Amino acid sequence: FKMAFSACVFIARWGSWPHFTPLLLKTLELNPGLDFMLLSDVAPAFPFPANVRFKRLTLDELVTRMQRKVGLQLTSLSSISAQARSGGWSAAKVNDLKVMFGEVFSEELASYKWWGYMQEDVLLGQLDSLCLTPSLFDQVDIISPFQFPMNSSGIFMLFRNTPAVNALWRKSADAPRVLSDPRYLVFDEWWGKSKDHMPAVIGREVDAKRLRMKYGTNLWYASDNRANYETILCWRRGAVHAVTRLIGTERLPCFGNAAPQSGMRGVCIFHLAELKKVVPINQLRLSEAAQAALSASAEFSLTRHGLFLPSEYTTALLPPREKMNMRAFTLLAGKLGHRNATAELLEEVSLRAYLSRLRRCVDAAVMPRSKELGLGRFWCSKQRHSCGWSLRVRSLCVRTCGLCGLLGCTERHGC
Image 1 (cartoon, rainbow, N blue to C red):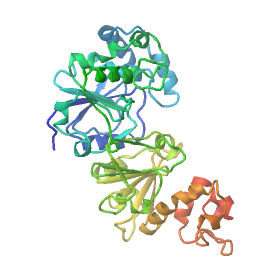
Image 2 (image 1 turned 180 degrees about the vertical axis):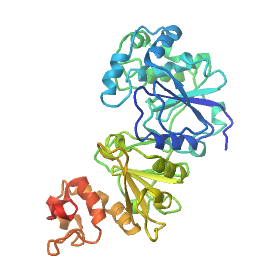
Image 3 (image 1 turned 30 degrees about the horizontal axis):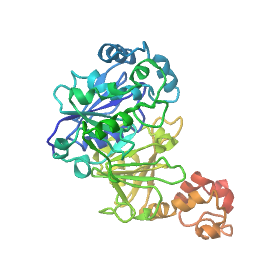
Image 4 (image 1 turned 30 degrees about the vertical axis):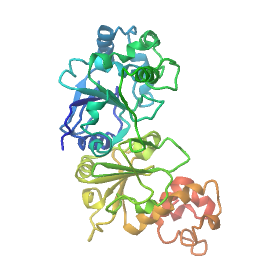
């Protein structure tokens, strides 16, 4: 289904792209009503969907263009980029400047009625099925996933491609400072050093009825930015579901269930605020066979232990087996120093136990008594000197919170 509007969304990043970029590209593909333009000095080393284009642009070339188009006073972003790249992430100052891209890339946007931007650590659901409708684009000028009064998001935004909307940033009293200060002032959002930021500008224009605004709802946005909650993200046939409190996780729609169950949340945009930092995701180097499996699969799931794919698509990644359980899943996890992600098969029983027990495993770090946890002797039995029932699941939990020391298992029991 092609939505009846034309929009180009920029994804800007300098330096290397994250190893989880194939997940991003897969979610972009299922949004054919949007075109995506990757701005970078390095092309991602992964196949592109038909609606994704790459524009090679160095930071110096971006500076030169912005000097000419919007009067940028900075002469270089390379020092900022070098500092950012030491952590593997892109230049932060660009986040101040991307609200100006409507003017900066006017030639590239000439054939589009809308434009926008999004971050590279975002996964999309099918926007046209939940959040974007053709009639909406006739009724508003700006679409934000955030609710009032935050107004503007650095994660994802859409703007009507008109001179007035593209020049909104010029109405800020902070605009000269943004163009001349090399620091990231958080001009695109509300929580930084900039006081007359884009949320304030947009709010004034809406109040004056010079601008029509569409705010996000609970369907628009979710994130894993609450570190005290476990997160399971489930992408299935273009729909994103997220659980951040692990209630009913054994009923996740991606793990063999046909439809979302209670406790699941369908959203248009999911921001990988924390999952992107853990080694199993951050170092998720997918081989060509793993990329092919991801491309063929109608679903994938993420926890902080890695990427889960249905085993029917991952036979090339696993040792030969006499019979493959079609309800089994393969866990792909990155490790420091490993060229490709490691692959581990989880049978259905072990997978269900892992999902239903994950919250308790995490809680064990702060409540270290197995009786209170309700784990029982089948998780670790001192008498039998072995970790009972599902060593594979228990091993995952051990890596999460150190259950070995709490429940008496030893290194030879999978710890």
